[in-house]
Length: 359
Image 1 (cartoon, helix red, strand yellow):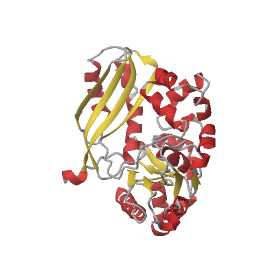
Image 2 (cartoon, rainbow, N blue to C red):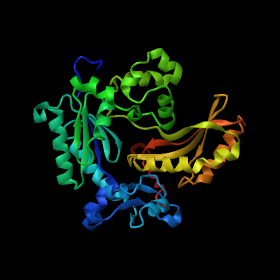
Image 3 (spheres, helix red, strand yellow):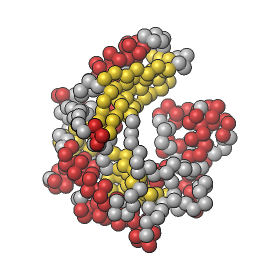
Image 4 (cartoon, rainbow, N blue to C red):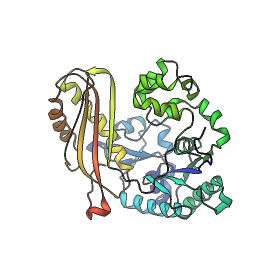
C-alpha cells in the first residue's frame, strides 16, 4: 500500500493526558481523584485536559468547567502551570533526539519521529518506541503512548489504539487488512459533518470507501476527495518535517442548515472559540500569536477572510467585531464559519506574548 519501495519507519509519540499527568506526578495524591486542568467555573473557564478518572464521567477537553462539575461534582480543578509543562516537554524532546534528528513536534506532548536510519535497537522502530516510552516514564515521570507504522497517518491512528501507556504497530504487510476495517471517522479531516455525509452513501469503514473511484470522491468532496482516496488505502507520502513551522491555527464548522442572518452566526462563535482555545493550549510554546481572523463561506459558496491585530486573551467580542465586518461583504446566509490566529516564530521575534486562555 506504500508508494515507496523501501518503507519508512515512523513513530507517533503522544503523552497521556499530559498536563494532568504532570500535576499527578508532582502531587501523587491527585491520582486518587478525577482531576481537570483548566480555569474556574465562575470565570467561564474551560477544561484543557483531564485524567482518565474524570473521563469516565464524560468530562472532556474544551468543555466548560461548570459543565464538567455538573457531570462530576467531585472533580478537582487544578489551574494550569505552563512553565512546568514546557519544562517536561523539553525533556521529552531531548529523549526523542537521542534516536533521530527527524522530529516533527505537533504540540508540547506530541511528535512524529522518522527512525528509518536509526541503528539503535538493531534498527527496530518497535523497540525504539518502547525505549522512548520507558525513558519518558523514568526521566519525566509521565506515560506516553506510541504508534509505529510506515507513514504518518497510520502511526498517528495507531498511537490512539492502546492508550494509556501502550503502543500499537502496523507493519507494511498488515496495512491492507488494518485500513479495510478502520472507521473513516479516524481519518484526519473527517469531522462530524463529513462523517455523516459518508454514512449517507453507505461508508463506515475505509474498506467501504475503497469501493469508490477517485473521480467519484473528488466530485463528492472536492480536493479532500483525493486525500480520502489515498488514506483509505493507507497511502500517505508526507515526510516527517523537522523544520516545519506553523503559520496559523484555525477551527471551522460547516453547518447542515444555512445560518440565516448575522445574529444566528454570532451565536455560533463562543463554541468555535472554545475549540480554538483548546487547540492553542497544545501548540508548541515557541510560537507567538500576532493576529486573529474570521473566515466565512456564504450559501452561494463565495468565501471571505478578514484578519485584524490580536486582542489579548482572544475575547469573544473581538471575533464578533471582525465577523460583523466580514459578513457585510456578502450579507447573505452562511454555511461555514472559521476562527483562527496567525503565528510568528518566537525565536526570530525575540519577544513573548502570554495569552490568558485558562481564565
